[in-house]
Image (cartoon, rainbow, N blue to C red; front, top):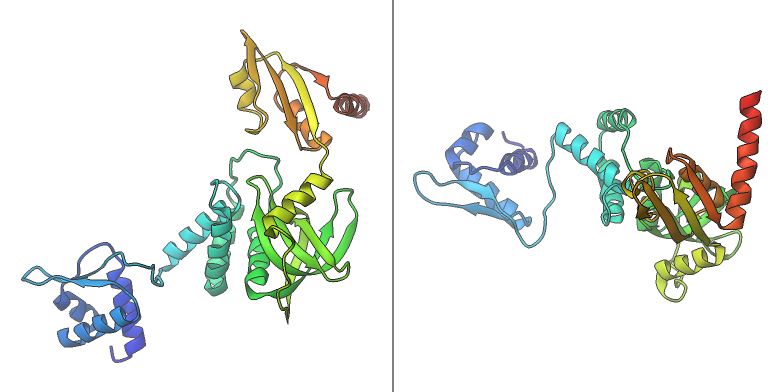
Length: 319
């Protein structure tokens, strides 16, 4: 093999398998001399790959852990497996790794061949994750598009649906993606409104980077996370929930999100008393899906909403 870059990539791919390779075997695999293998190993070390050599009759070469992780060479199956795993992490299935998963996924999908993108999408579409939360899902492609625009400091256009259902088109300078564990938010400077805004990513549609670069503005006091927290506090009306269930606490807990955990009040009964920032509609739906008798004591707006919803559903069923 006379093509040095191609030979180095093949050598690196072999060394990344968890074993020690005798120099003679590497030379045979790559059809070169043992001297060439030694020179190639020196080149990899110069590039930052920590290749360790052992002497003796059974000595050889292997890649070890260094101070920083060098670029990896992946085969098709490995690339697909990592991309699917990163998509799961980006979908907040694993607490604490969401943002890192999105950054890594954006880098991987930038260089992933189209044939492998199709395999990843096919596998993703054929599986259903069993997650707990409000059901607000985000397409991985949306997250990677936003992450790429944030990293590249590139203006972004997208459609947006507000909480009241109003549709609009936005042109923004994206600054940060923030995960709260239940939802993703984009902190950005809205060009047409000339002000900072936070956007729920599950309400974003058809995002695309315009190619126009921007010079970063100074973020609001406290940074992106603090600004988003202030925005959410202004927009949120909290509910003081008080609900009795005619079922054991374990049964009800398994059917509600973690932040709506009831306490046992006796044999076969439990009570939920907590403050929630969720919407009336979402709380009503989650309570109905518990699949056991329950009674709402508070708040009054939730009681009124459930009564109205019950009337609509009853009318629909009678028809």
